[in-house]
Image (cartoon, rainbow, N blue to C red; front, side, top):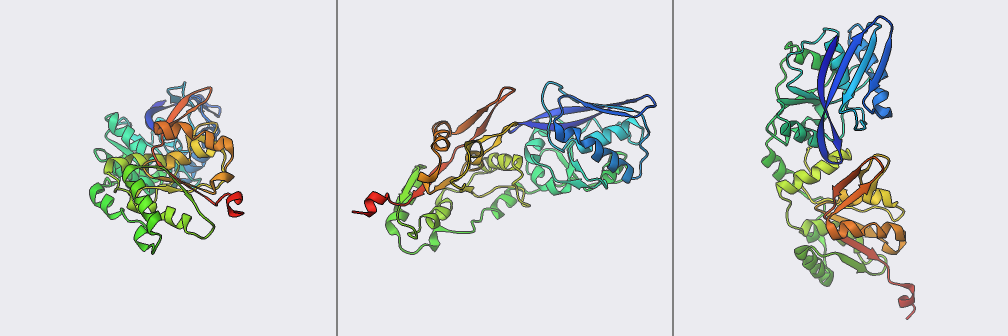
Amino acid sequence: MLARVFSTALIGIEPYLVEVEVNIEGQAFKYATVGLPELSVKESKERVISAIKNTGYRFPPKRYTINLAPADIKKEGAAFDLPIAIGILAALGFIMHADLEDYVIVGELALDGSLRSIKGALPSAVGVQTKGKKGLILPAENAREAAVTGGIEVIPVRTLHETIQFLNGERSIKPLVVDVEKLFKRSQKYTVDMADVRGQAHVKRALEVAAAGSHNVLMIGPPGSGKTMLAKRFPSILPQMTLAESLETTKIHSIAGMVRSEGLVAVRPFRSPHHTISDAALVGGGRIPRPGEVSLAHHGVLFLDELPEFQKNVLEVMRQPLENGEVTISRAALSLSYPANFILLSAMNPCSCIAML
């Protein structure tokens, strides 16, 4: 008994299709996941088995082999739970195979069969669109984010049972459609505004020049002079984001799991990391590289308060993103590039030697 389900994964911010192949044979229970699965994918075994049983389906003791192709790329994350469960049920004969080729499926399963949100819904939807698939089946919490791409059916589901009923034609689920232009305009609201600032005419003039020319800024002044307050309001005088910029920024925030319920980042991001931040957290990194603060500030502002307190090696790694507008993270297995085109704002107190004069 063999079944094939399509899912999707990410390399950096670029999506690629993953074929989830499930083969069931024999009479003795054995469960194996192959295709370079990371620990979170291997642990899906317990979630998938519990979800299938708690949804009311029989899980016979057989040999289950799950292959995630292409097998030469590491797979990570819990988003493979739902496609693996669907593949197993299809191989057991509980799901008709007719529509499995048309849809890409992602989702994390809870033990009771309900679905939890995932990271990277927007770039996953873009990948589905470019590969010519009919639609994307994913948790309802991520549906609005994925629907901003347009051009594909976005099917929101809340449980494994709902997904099975939809694939078997027993339940009709209306694809979620989002008016992107309307959503984009409605979300273009800043919580703070430079118009709230009274006085500080010379600083505001300097920030206006910096905003007009995309210049980096260093503010020097005593504590309480308003450096941080002005920095937080700086994005409000930058040109409004275009829809293309918004989608590109949303992709990065989606990978980091930071997209809000609106599903779109429509205002220029403002990132203000603490001075104890590591170089990997600032520019991105980890065993499987993730975007850092410089990428989360893409098309927006990166604010470094108390600049002299940052470690020298942390400031040194910012050279590439400041010069090239992107950051490249190299590991033994792969090399990834994340966009990092931002305006750098920094602030510091006057040097103590100046204060003594």
